[in-house]
Amino acid sequence: MAMKPTTRWGRLAVALVVAFGCLLAVFFLLVASGQRGGRTFFSNLWLTIPMLLAAACGIGAFFVGAASIIRARERSVFVFLATGVGLFVLLFASGEIVFPH
Image (cartoon, rainbow, N blue to C red; front, side, top):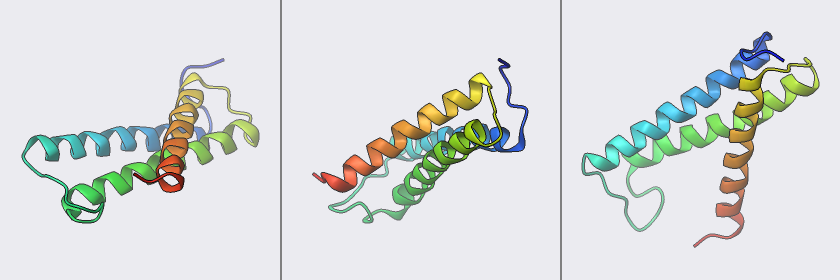
């Protein structure tokens, strides 16, 4: 079992998780700089856009990582971690949609 991915799909899954982390950091930097949300999710587009892109990258990492594990037989530690993070993001996002608050 290798640490780094060997297939193209595996590298893409890891890149998507890295992009997820960077976009999440951008979101928190914007919040620290004084940006605040409004009554709805789309009230402040400066906060909405990085968060939607981060969610898309996280969910994409799950599907690409799962495909690389199943179809390309990728057995890298980083791909398994990327798929786990993507699964967590998918479950969190679907929970927010099904049970809004």
